[in-house]
Structure formats: structure tokens, C-alpha cells
Length: 359
View 1 (cartoon, rainbow, N blue to C red):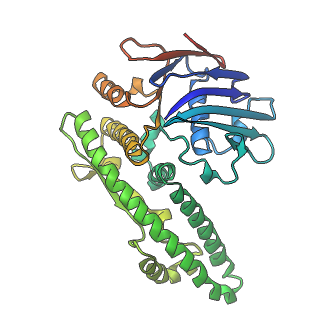
View 2 (tube, rainbow, N blue to C red):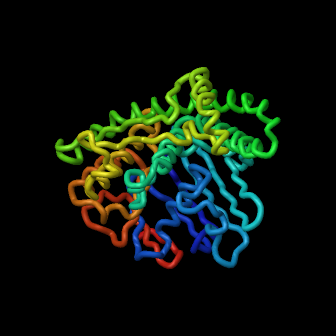
View 3 (cartoon, one colour):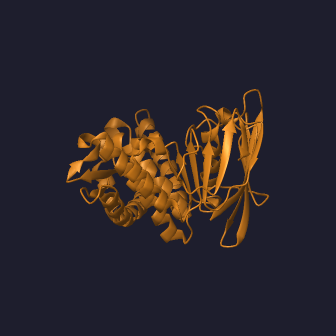
């Protein structure tokens, strides 16, 4: 799975830009605030239909412009694809796949997979459960588009159920409609729990190995899926939802379900979030990203595109070497402030003030 061309038009600080990366390691270097991360954001946008930096599309349109576009050409197993993302300052965006409009975002999932690792991804380890759920959902959606559709349905039903719980304060006669939403929510919740549990089990194998290798065998990283609703079938999920009904009615919100799941990260049986050092947390984040890369390869049959945004300066020499060795099979984009010696770079691109050129 390789990107053969990336074109930007009025995207972020770029007026017009184009680059043709190689299948190996592509170094993107230049001083800070010149537009290096914007290139990775453009790739991410075409892979997942959203930015990893902002939910507001207006922010991705060049200042003073009304629209922007990103077009990406890629190849997978001999099949060429063209993904175009049009951004509008007003109204909805429009995604084209091989020139044809994408009606639902799920149609984009899995066309081009990517793994992005940036310093802010320490939040997976350091922040609350929402960050770890987002990590699980993003990777599952890339791997299994059916999961993405089910997750969308779950969130839709969850909103409807919560709206109903609030409406019941003023109109108790609506209580008879609650079981309808409970049944839908239970069915979707059970599916999401099963998929998350299976994914974490597979991810654990790679995370265990990667973390052990990076730490020189001194530490073992354990992943622990912690479902809020302990159910892997719809019937059990429904019973648990019914047990929570009185509390839900009192609080006017759904208090149980996958929207409250967590992923435990432990070393030596201790929570990394609470007891891990900065170095341990950084190593765990790196281990997770490398494991994500390997698991996507196993599940899809193709290496995803790997993007490393300003992480080399955060790692010591041994970790950098380990990372580059693991990255070699995948097309990789590395951003840095300068071109460092010793990297097995296939192509290098210099970025300055919203312009990019191959050097």
C-alpha cells in the first residue's frame, strides 16, 4: 500500500503543492511552523475522512479562501486509487473516490490505511478513557469497515435514547417507547464489545513483544480490555441495560455501554497512567503504534502508511533505531527539523513557508 502522489490546493498554509513520495522512507524536513505536519494531516484526511488535529474543517482552508482540496493517488496490490477531499467554508465537504462521490464515510474506510505517531499520542497513555476508546475505534474502523458502520449506528441510537430519557421528565407517557431503543442499543453494544475484545487480544501479542524488545527485556506491557457492559451477546446486554434503567431515568442519560469502556495499560501489574515514568509512557505509546502497524498488516494483507510526526527528537538512539527497523517494510513519512545522517531515506523533501520541494 503506497502513496504515489499527493496534491494540495489552498490547504492550511499551502497555496498549491505537489509531491511524489517513494515506497520507502520519505523525510520531510524544515523549521517549525513551515507546514510539515500539514502534509501528514492531508494524508490522514484522505485515509479516515477526518483530521487528527481539528474537527473544524474551516481551519484546514487557507486563510482568505472559501474552499480547499487534497488529492491523493495510491496503489495497493496493483490496484490504483484516487481519493479527493474537497473542503468548503460553508456547507458539507465532498469526497470523491476514483472520481465518484462517496455517499457514506464508511465507503472510504480501508481504501488506504495509515498509522500516525506524534508526540501528542502520549495522551493514549496519560489521558482518560476517551482517548483510548478513540484509539481502538479508529483502528478497528480502518480494519473492518463494518465496525465503523455499527459504531455510527450505536452513537446514533445512544443519542436518541438519551434524548428520550431527558424528554421523559416532561412527558412520562413516553416510557413505553424506551424498550425499543434498549433492544437496538443492546444488539449494537454486544457487537462492539466483542470486536474490541478480539482486537485487544490480538494487539496484546505484538505490544508484549515490541515493548519487551524496546526495553531490553526488562519490562512487559499488558493490555486489558475493560468493558463497561460485561456482555458479548445482545440478550445479556439487554438485561444489564434494564438493571440500569432506574439510574438512567434519574440521571437522564445512559450510564452503561461501550461509550464508557476503557483500555488498561500496565507494566508489572501497575497502571502506566498513574505510576509509569515519562520514559515508560513514551515507550508504551511507541509499542502501541508499532503493534497497530503490524496488526493492520496481518488483518488487511498490506502494510499501512506509517507517519512519524516529530517523534525522533523524543526518542533515544536505541528506540529510534528500533523504530526505523520496524518501519522499513512500510511506506513511511518522517518529519524533522533537519536532515539527519544515518537514516535510510529514499526521498527527502524540504518544506519552507508553505512550499515543498524534493532535494
